[in-house]
Image 1: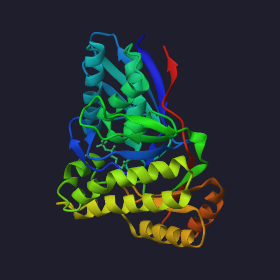
Image 2: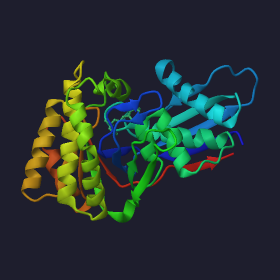
Image 3: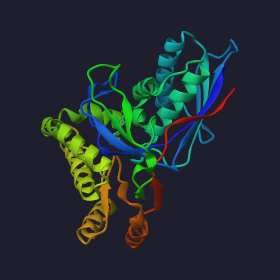
Image 4: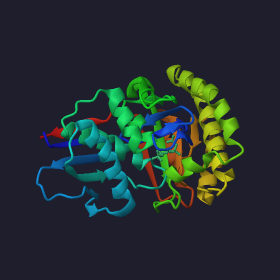
Length: 327
Ligand code: DP6
């Protein structure tokens, strides 16, 4: 077996991962909880090249060849697969994503989840869900949460072995949606990896980490009990905390734009008036409005009036990463 294609969805974190206890192994400083995003995906085909002349891995994204740092990150990840499969072939990686990358819609999550599955399977490895999640984590932390289905928790653990993600509830457990207000599609200047490394320099990070188990518990219970008011409160609090860390680390990171703040204000006001919706923001200016499915039309209507929004995407809870083809 030398070639396999896999598809994975990005995920939106309800309780965020920000900072590692081990940067090189991507062991997170705190646990996190997310929802996979149906409808958005990365689809990746990996072919291990048998011909002797292949000296380097190759990567293309949406038809364009990729070199430099992004290729190097993929190659280093493929080294882990080569080591596990005890082989030394180079790979051709062909990837397509149907959403913009580098803007706070976690493209690295679906990218490394799809790559972990396609590369390992094409190398003849048949990994179970926990092992795949562990592998995907090495490429991008949040990618481990795109392996299992639906609502997913990634455990903070001291060891590589134990730091994996598991499903808390299936996608159809709760009819939630993420209305993504795309405010910019430009590649962000400081990526998550550098951000994680700087997190400990914020004087607020220790307090954030101390409260993480409590926030995880509230979020997990809110999901299991389909308790939207509790979910909304903890999701917004956790997003605000992560952005407070970003804004107070040694080289402060400000990801918000004026339109980001406008969406935050509008959604808080609408929730006070009874709309089951809340906001959360990753490492970019885009706002994810998490709402009950029945509230999607109203959220779209409200956001439709705001200037500065380039696009609105709606995603429901998505399934697990899966193979689409093996040859
Ligand atoms: C803000 O998983 O993208 O989206 O491991 O360096 O690839 P790397 O970081 P990444 O960090 C995600 C940060 C976040 C919050 C989250 O998804 O939990």
